Structures are given as C-alpha cells and as structure tokens.
Image (cartoon, rainbow, N blue to C red):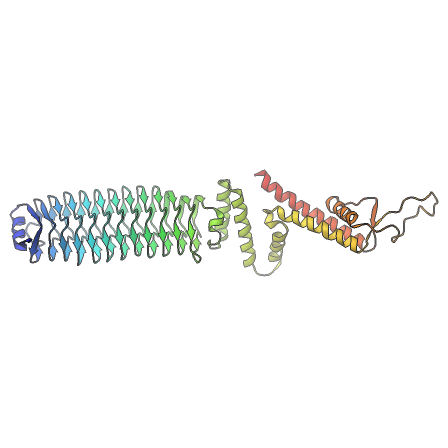
Length: 460
C-alpha cells in the first residue's frame, strides 16, 4: 500500500532547504509552491512512481535536479520555472492541464514516454541543452511556439494527436522527428540551424512549414502527408530530401527558396497538386513523369524546370517538360493567329522537340501523293524516241505515254518530296503538275523541320 504524504510536508522540506526524495507515494492535497519566499528550491526535488493531485510549481528556480519519473499528476504548472540541473519527466502521466510556458531548462530536459491527456503548453520555453521527447504522447496537442532549443531536439516516435503548434521556434543544433505522428502541425516561421529529419513520420492533418528556414540538410523521406503540405516561402539552405514520400493532397512550394530538392520515388494522390509558382531552385531532382500530372500550370515554372533538367543532363525530361508546357500554353490561348501557329507547331514538329513528327509526316505525305498520282493516272512514262522527224520531236501530248504503276508513282513522289525534282522518265499531266509543286514545297518544309529538330537533339 502506497504511503501518503501531505503536500504541506513537501512544502516545509522545500522551505527549510531539505531535499525532497520520495518514491511510490501518494501526495494528498494541493501542492502549491508558487508563493514561497524566496521562490527557490535549493536541493533535489524527486517524486517518482507516485500519484499527485494538482501541483503548482510556477515561477520557481530549481537549483538541484528535478525528477518526476513515472508519476501520475492531475494538473501540473511549471510556468516560468527555471531548471538549473537536469529535469526528468520520463513516463509522467498528466490527466489535466500541463504548462511549462516561459520555463527555462538550462540542462537536459527529458519527457521520454510521458503521457499528456490534454494540451501541453510549452510556448516561450528555452531549452539550453538536450530536449528529449522520444515516445511521448500528447493527446490534446503540444504548443511549443516561440521557444528555443539550443541543443538537439529529439521527438523520435512522439505521438501528437491534437494540434502541434511550433511557430517561430528556433532549433539550434538539429532536430529529430523520426517516426513521429502528428495531427495538424504548424512549424510556420521556425528556423532549423542543424540537420533535421522527419523520416518515417505521418502527418494526419495539415503540415504547415510556411516561412520556415532550414539552414542545413533536412530529410522528409518516407513520410505520409495526409493533408496539405505547405512550404510557401520556406527557405531550404541545404539538401531537402523528400524521396519515397506520399502526398495525399497538395504540395505547396509557392515562392520557396530551394538549394537542392529531391522528389525521387514520391507518390501523389489522384487529386493532389504541386504548386511551384515563384519558387527558386538550383537543383530539383524529380523525374518529369512523376510530377507532370500534378503540377499547377505556370509558364515560368515550366521553363525553370526545363533549364533544371538540362543542367541535370536529363534531356528527355527537358523535352517532355517543354512539350507539355507549350501544349498547356496553347490550350489556354484565346483563338487567334497565335493559337493557330502554336497548333501547327504542335502537329508538325512537336514544338521542335519531337523529330519523329516531321519524319512520320514525310512518310505519310510521300505515300498519299504517290497514291493520288497513281489513282488519278496523273503521272505518265515518257514515250521512247521514235525517229528524228521534226514533227516527232515536238513536245509529247499530255495524254501520251503509259500511266505510271503504283511503285513508279511512289518512286516519283519520293523524288519530288526529297529533291523537289522528278525523274526524266516521268512527267505530270494536267492538274497534277501543281500537285507536284505543292509536294515539293511540303517536302522542303517538313525536311527542314526534321533536320532542325534532329539537330537540336543531337547537338546537346
């Protein structure tokens, strides 16, 4: 049976400067130390594996270590408290309100495996050393805005079911949120000076990193974003790696500043959209086939991606991106000469990046003209010379001579198309003379397009 200790007894120990060393007890009454004079706890304050009601320790300066490991507390108030030595709250369970607003942890602060059934308030809190929240659970959310972590902040495996408000918070020596789980998370305007990792985490709600700054590499790999992932105006000073991540909804990078960005092996929901409008990036590794169906149209973004792919020497991606850019731009143009010219550029040469288009057109046109010549009997073989009678040396009659066969018509068509000239053995008659001229013009046009498009591909 647990020993019962009165809250007043603990208060007297603190006032008299004695250490508080309790384990496996039940604290009866309201433990209120906020009004003691002076507001200093000079020795160790240890209450482990115990049960307590409400505890108000706000405004106190703890000169010795604090350890509440395994203790169950109803309401807990450490607002504006100063912890000069290690503060250990491992496996603590708080069923009511918990606040550390304005607190100052000068040494390690550990909340490993702790359980907060309602919201935990840690706004304006300073962590000068290691902040350890591994495997902790915040069912009512965690509010840690405008706080600072000078040491490493470790949230490995944390479960934050409610809102995670971490706005304008400074992480000075890196942060680890690996395998964590969030409800709605707001990291807006926060800064990360060291290496940061969210590997394997799940964001059940929205994830807001707007105006955040990552000075070094950040790893968002193998993450699930079930809500919108917002990185508008975010600055990535180092590598931002999103490899293997799933975006169920939108990825917003509007006006972000990105040094290097990796989107390899990412997947997107059917309705998800990628917003890169106004974004500046030096290097973006994302195969065009992975993102093209989700990218919001913006001409400058498409052209920036084309340049990016060229610098990566992903020339097929560059061509495909440019082709899709021109196609989208064409669809958005009002009807007029500009739209007509774009349409012709599309069907004739794929906007200059599809040399196969004019090649196929050439094969088709040679075959079509050859078939027309054959069916219309418009190409005739010149008759053989008979004698030197002046009357016979006159120009042959248009109807004189044997009509060309199908293969001869095809041969004639190919000569006209490729060389703008015909064989002396054949001659067009009637209206087919004008078709020969037309085929020669088309041949010159499509062959020029083919050579220009092919040269563009081969020269690079």
